[in-house]
Length: 196
Ligand SMILES: N[C@@H](CCC(=O)N[C@@H](CS)C(=O)NCC(=O)O)C(=O)O
Image (cartoon, rainbow, N blue to C red; front, side):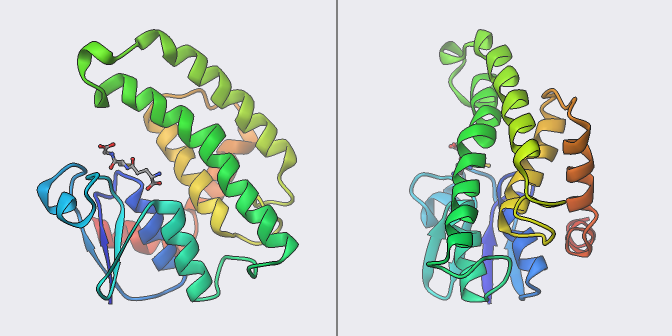
């Protein structure tokens, strides 16, 4: 059985969301980033970590792509044009959305206090808003890749919820509707019930 490591308030949420979507059994271990138990699995101390048998995988996007390919769900076939577009969307969300949130988090409570620069946050929020507007304008249907919910939607919708809790600007109404649409899925409801 798959084992997922990482508190649900972290990017581990993306991995358990993916597993709920594809309806595969898993065990979840709510471990804090930087804990010794996590470091024993992943020297950097970062979560999420996935164990598939004896194999240890890291990075939320890499893990959910692995699961999607292995179980042939929520991913376009490797080597197809659609897959190249899917991958481009994943990398774009990481560059243009996740990085803004992560940068603000680092300068709020992750970096050592004397390394934090609060002045960086308004520009991260401004860029986030601009990038979200562009991504929403370019989406290919009600979800990012078209009318079907696909892997990049897990990452962007998760960033959306993260942005809400980090008090990032969420003035784009279609983005708010999109986040709600993604979180209204049965897989998320199952997941939230399981975590409560
Ligand atoms: N790109 C990685 C980022 C992993 C990451 O930075 N995770 C955070 C929690 S969401 C963490 O473990 N931070 C602890 C640290 O940076 O030391 C992913 O998507 O999994």
